[in-house]
Each structure stands twice: as C-alpha cells, then as structure tokens.
Image (cartoon, rainbow, N blue to C red; front, top):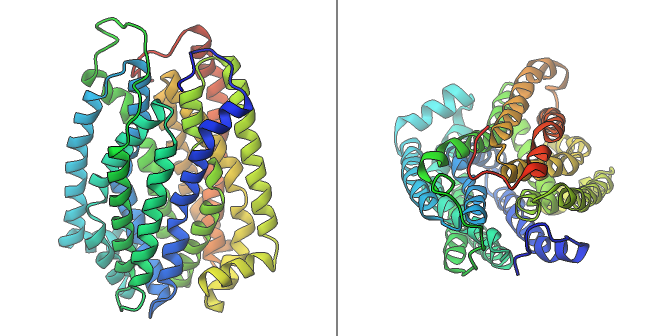
Length: 443
C-alpha cells in the first residue's frame, strides 16, 4: 500500500518497504564474490581476476547513465503518474550505449582503451578484451531492469525486485561454476554476469505495480521530454563518475610495482566489502519514496543511520586479523601473494557502509527535492579528490596496491559525504519545507 503524503513513517513501515531492498542488495552484490570465487579457480587466476575487473569497470562506465532510470522513473511516477517519456528516453540511450560497448568488444578501440588509457598489457589485456565480447549487451539489459525497478519502487512493490535479483544471482552462479572446468578465464565471468542480468530484466519487466495517485498538474508541470534531460543529466554524471572510480583506481594500481597482484587483490577486497555493505545500498530508494517533508526525513534518516552503523560495526569485526584471512581463504582460495595484501586492505574497507549509506540516502533525498545538480557536483568532487590523492599516496602505499585502492575510495567518499551534508541543510531540506518538489527540475 502506498502511504498518503505526509503520513507518519514508523519502524514497521520502514522495514516492510526496505527489507526486500536489503535482500536485493545482498543478492546483487553477491554476484561479485561469486564471480571472483569462480575466476580464482581458473588456470591463471591473477590474470582472469584482473582482466575481468578491468573489463567490468569499463562496461560499468558505459552502462552507468542508464542506472539513473530507477530514480527518474520513480520520481516521474510519483509526480505525474506517466512513464512514457522516460521509456522513450531509455530506449534511445540503451541502443546507443550497447553500440558503444560492441565497438569496444569487436574493434581495435577496445585494445586502445585498455592498453593506452587504462595501462594494462599482455595477459590482462587479452582477458579484458575477451570479457568485453560477452559484456556488450549489458547496457540494453540494464535499461530494461532500471526502468522497471523504478516503476516498482514508486508503487512500493519491492518484493518482486528482490525475487528478480535472486533469480539473477542463481543463474549467474550456475553459469559461472559450470564454466570453471573450461579454460575461458575472464570470459567466464562476463558470460555469467550477462546471463544473470538478462534473467533479472525479464522478471522485473513482467511484474505488475500500482501507479501512484498524484495531484492534478498544470500543463507545464506535466511536460516530460523537454525537462527530462535537464533533470537526468546530473544523475547520469553521478553514476558515470561512480563507475569510473574503480577504472581510475585500477589505472593507478596498474602503475604499482606489481600491477597483477595489486588489481587482483583489490578486485577481491571490493567484492567482499561491497557484498557485506549490501544493506545500505538501496537507501536512496527509502529517501526517494518515503520522504516528502522534514519530519519524515528526520525519522527515515534515523533508521537509515542505524542500519549503516550496524553494518559498519559488522565489517569492523570481520576485519580483525584471523577472521578476515579465513574469509578470504575460504571463499577464494587466494594465493599467499594475494591473501596478505587483500587482508591488510580489509580494515580500511570497513568504512564503506557508513560512508556509502550516507551517500545513498542523501542522493535519494536530493532527487526527491529536485536538486539533482547537487548530486552531480558531489560525485565530481569525489573523483577530483581521488585524482588529487592518487599521486600523493602512490609512492608510500604502492607496495600494497589493494590497500592503496581502498584508501583512495574512502578518501573520495569522505569528501562527498561532507559536501552532501552541507548542501542538504542549505538546499534540499528547505525545498521540502516549502512545497512538494517540482517535477524534473535540475539545479
């Protein structure tokens, strides 16, 4: 049931809405450790892990603009109740970006990007190009998935999202481990990821959801295409920069004394850390769908902060020496050359949940309030800080590339968190106090 605007949000209402999204996050982020575990069992695990990590980072940058469709579709339905312009927009962008991915996969463009821009060579280069030949359909599948997830969030139908993600994870696991007996390397991970995403896209597209009841709008308020781009562009910038971050960090790690081990260990730590941080990954949906005034913000933020601190505490416990090595060895059977640097990076990654949870909650709040420009500026600030910190930390921390990579990610998230907190007080909360957010307004 969709709550009336301004009605109270209690703990039970928050949990009913959010728990399926927690399950979704766990199932979604489980894909990375599952794939890492499968790739670690191939004939050349370091090259396979590193090659897939680089290829996945690049395809993430390519399909990232389509991830905003979740928030744009939900905002459009909550404001107007009409998804037609968003659907047309998604179709055009999906075709273009899948075409770009195919260009990277099947022409010398891919080799140029991986070798000249990212800086990988030899076995890692071959594995990355091989993975791209199976990842190129991902943008189109992401568009279908994101559009219908936004529709379901607006209708407060979060359970089908969890069901679809569970199917995705199951398909991915079956395909990945079925292929470990073949000498396919990073291509294994790419095929499994694409197959799982396809299953998820089909299920969410077939799941029904009620259309939210919205107030009657003026002709200007109900316009779609002419304001959709200005509203969406900062969100696209945000997700592109988010997915560019691991590619930037991998590029830095490619310049460490042992790039293979650095990228491979960083890929494993990221997979485990983001899986464990899963409960905070969907907080943008909570603030977007549940917050329409300052009173609701205070209540929902309290629940969100509690979730983030509990998950951070859990990661802190799991980062204790002995426990972290057991997790990494049991899950990935890492070679000692990868186990030690991955273990040393784990305590730094324990900060991910509280910083990521803050980011997700406030970005959803800004979308709800129509302040999407601030979302893009926060993301740009985070990347600038990472780029500035990279040359300063490369020398003293280059011997442990995994810890260097995680530290760069944390430094960027801290800068973004400070910016979002300040801007929320100055802009977003004031807009919520004045009136319901204007439809698709950029900042």
